[in-house]
Image 1 (cartoon, one colour):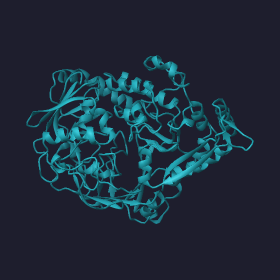
Image 2 (tube, rainbow, N blue to C red; image 1 turned 90 degrees about the vertical axis):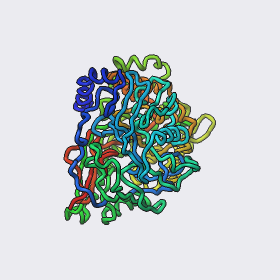
Image 3 (tube, rainbow, N blue to C red; image 1 turned 60 degrees about the vertical axis):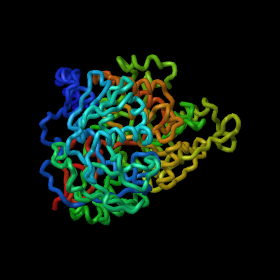
Image 4 (cartoon, rainbow, N blue to C red; image 1 turned 180 degrees about the vertical axis):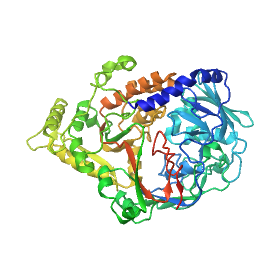
Length: 605
């Protein structure tokens, strides 16, 4: 548990609960909204605490990305769009602070109102809010955006929209949304939906239009691009929100550019050549050995380690239980036993990185070691008969040896589990079921993902010792997205970043609808009534204590479900960048997270 984070969150809850209750019960307008308690910043705050309000404007920052893009519409399932479009050209009613776990402040909306039960929420738009084409942001734009995203947009928007009973205009600048479910997060989720220009989409098919950048109200506009190769965003000097306290010190670069390269190695080479401005290094081993190029030695490039207090999330190889060979938890446990993390970590990272032990590890939301107790045990008890072993009793990952590539002891355990599940090695050395069918499967990787490919190369050698016959397939980014969107893989490299404010998005990650509906994050195909019950308890919680218990219970279900062979996480983000790029000394709670670079950075000689 991160005690500092817990004390920070708890202080907000305890100090403000009574004051908020009086205001919210009456539906009084407020400048911000929190899941629990009151926002940390007062109504008259000057700027975000992790921004520099005096940061100079100007300069440019250039990012390098592996892969390509074939769409300019990031809000639908079809195609792959540059992430910067959603981040920089569009805005939401409320702004998420990355210094608080579960708090939003007004952006397009000057105020937010709700009742004590959060059965409705009402936003009042700022009078001067306008799109980049100069037209005002209206209530009609808000209603159209929420309805369109909820019915035609990416599946990530549809779950929350299903809980909307109605949406209506209640004043010239007011819009009210009522809900049909007990879910205290919905008021916040509606505030975080991108608001688009209704007029731009008249006569167009929103879900099928990929070659037109949305008109938004954000600080940047798309200046130029070449599909699949690069995109450039230009700061809008007439941005309507530039003088708001929430925006002071943010969006300082005149130009933000993304260049796309074939793979991660080429992207790094572009950075060493000075073609890009910044590089995030995910490999601890490379961080210690690959940064002796001339620009580093001369001081033109500086290296930083940015600490954070966010959960580890989950990264590793996910097993698709839609494939019958991975439906048995004993098989999945065998696959985990066969993965010698200690050897892989030593080989690729010099043994420096900690292993992911659960989905919310590295945070107070993570499950505690040993048996479930207290409220966590109470939440899990009704589902005990159907939960995999270890969920309630406690589950820990196997430990290998960094100097033992063969991983003999754990491979013996894996072999025993496979035999229990009906798989045996024949005289030909091939693992087969009772009908003689070999244990054969495909591991799907994205081209250019060199780190994951290195992990898989080592792992495949271990699997061969069990008599397995895995095939490794690398496809381009478009094919990778298409296949994973439709779950056309057996095993794939999987990453899910998780925050300190998990909520309805967890249904998209682990909900049963994702077993058959395309585009969810439920790549493993899990169908767990217990997991869905924990998510429901999370979003209905009225206290932080109940919320933490429900999240820890969900963490147990996910971890003991043995769906992912987890690798490592980093307690810091490793950033190398041009010496002329700067950020405030005061770092946010989430560290290097969306909302940090380039949002609070600036350029200065």
